[in-house]
Length: 319
Image (cartoon, rainbow, N blue to C red; front, side):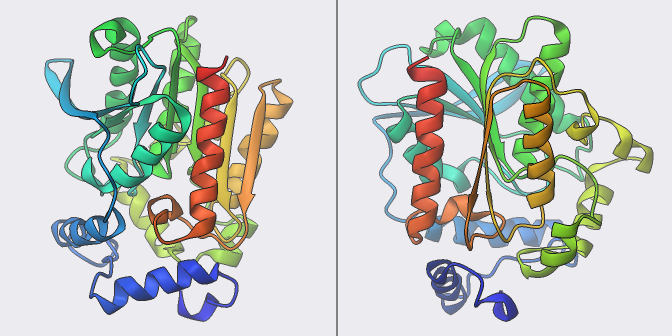
């Protein structure tokens, strides 16, 4: 972030400095063996989640799907019987991330929204390439709709969401469920998602140097790692902006103004509006890609989480 520091939220710059001072610098997976990149994230996650108080009810479970089990973590709001549920997929370029890394952000969303969250530990690339992660997200939503009563949630009030790659998976799953003709989803909560394979948009040209977290080289690595063949870039399950958007549930989109994926999010918001889908896109000044895990250190991130919680509450809890 050094050359772009003047434009970035000062608290986020300070937070990044704290990570560096402690030797907690994430590895670029495009140039680092994937095992090392994943291992480097573990202490970073522990630092970012430091002080996060567990909810009264959190439990790990396994969702059966197609002869295998999908690990998940269920967070339930305190004192609410049969709450609505958000099925959530984390970011990490389809290749990084785990259930522990998002504890702080998801606990805050649960407490402030009154909705439960089922966090999906989908299969990661390159060990499991497309469509493995998409299939896991879709299967988990279907399970929540079918067996939500056993989870102690209200299966009539379901949402899907995620951040970055996870938002891609949530939107693609929502499109698949719409196409089946009876989607159980009532809301989408999408944080700075990647919705196309376009790395030449104006926002990529402005913010894709790596000074704002993401780089064009990383984007090329993402697709080469996630996909088994270049032609899959034309699959709407990879690039949801290729699909028609009518008939999706209402959506809340959030992104930082310094994110290379800004144009993807602008295009999605415009497409949803043109298709008659209620949608709100909120842009946060000075925030870069991947901000959601910095809530304990950055005021504007806490505001972004509060906004997302309010949108989820309005879309599910109070609907």
